[in-house]
Amino acid sequence: MKFVNLWISLILYIFSRQEYCRELQFPSPGFYTFNVISCVMDAKAVLSCPPVLWPSVLVVTWEIVLREKPPCFRAYRRDTNQTTRGNCTDKRITWASRPDENPALQVDPVAITHDGNYTCQIITSDGNFHYEYHLQVLVPPEVTLVQTEGTAVCKAAAGKPAAQISWIPERDCVSEQKPYWGNGTVTVQSTCCWGGRHVIAVSCSVSHLTGNKSLSIELDKGVRTLGFPGSDFVIILCVKFSLLLVILVFVGFLYFQRTNDCR
Image (cartoon, rainbow, N blue to C red; front, side, top):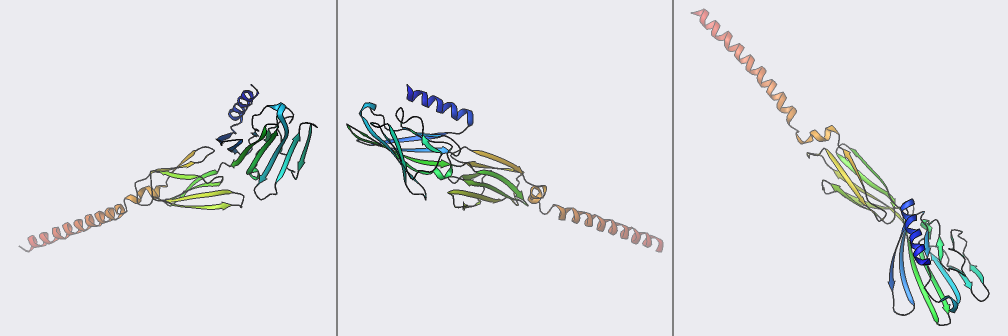
């Protein structure tokens, strides 16, 4: 019942703040389970320990290994009802509640520096049980779309992981990825040239694990008229031909009139 209430609270939290964590579980034979949990930055992550009979529990230990940081641990000893920790200085990583009631760990709020592995080991009189989590922090990219002289540039900046960009209408475009500030985020940029085509507006769609976004933009008038490069020349040619025809008619009229006078 307590587990069900926890999930209900988590679902309400997701829809109220549009921040969420998604978990995939990969059970293994024996006493080991591996989990992959993806959380949007600033969400709240709750990591549970293996479900065991509490009276048989002797010691609960959380080992935390974050990217580019030394390992740390938090432990609870049931017979003395004491908690200890070693090298854990991040105040956002704490027990979810009283460890003698629920030894789950919480990360609140999740930051990009919390990428890493979290392992709960429970030592019981019946054996040892392990739950390992790989926490992947998701960062939504900032999406922009600009255009100049028939070239459209769609950018998904500072996202984690890298976003994917597609265009409507489809076009062979040049895409590039650049690491952003060395913190694991990536900027993706796609550049398309629409010159010489009958295209009035274009849309770029950005696909990302945190959600999809689509932006549209109208190309400038100069771009829309590039499909008819000879129109101005044709008009000028017609005007010149008309003037020449008028001159020829006038010269012919004078010639015939002089001929009649000579008779």
